[in-house]
Length: 62
Image (cartoon, rainbow, N blue to C red; front, top):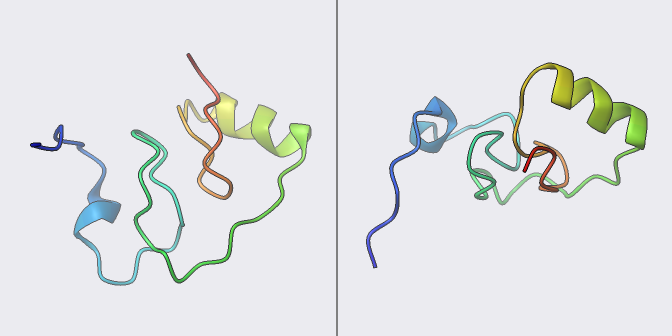
């Protein structure tokens, strides 16, 4: 199955600073530990127009 193209450049980085892509939710750096996020952090992430949380992978915008 062919993967849908994502414009986020973290997919191309060997040392991505986040665990999950904020655009598609795919894991981009499995070496980073999953973080338990608060609702306040998710609110801030939604303000930055992220579809997915970069720390826990939760879908923020449907």
